[in-house]
Length: 116
Image 1 (cartoon, rainbow, N blue to C red):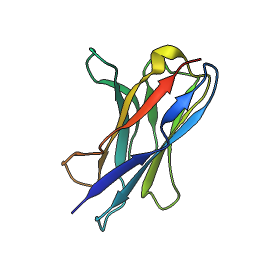
Image 2: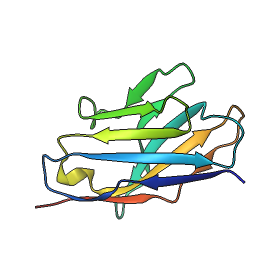
Image 3: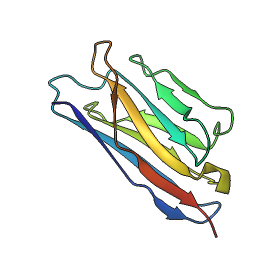
C-alpha cells in the first residue's frame, strides 16, 4: 500500500526557515510528479508548489522566490524548502504525489506555524 508521510513542520519565527519532507513507501515506482498544498483555518486548500516528471517547477505567486520544491536523487522523497517565512504561511501542508500513473496519493499533513 502506497503511503506518503510528511515531516519537518513546526513553529518558527517570521523570517525563519523550515524544510518539509514527503517520504514515499509501498510503491515499486519512484515519484513521477508531486505537489505541496496548504490549508489555513477557514480557507480552501491551495497549491503552493509543484514539480513535474521532467523536474519543471511552478509556484504560487505568494511563495515565489521564497520556497523551493525538489526531489531526492532516488525520487522517493519530495522536499519543500521554505525561507523567509511569514505569518500568512501558517497552515497545514500536504503533499500529493503520483507514481507514473493517474492516481493521486496524499499525505496526512504537517502543521507549519509562523509566529513570534
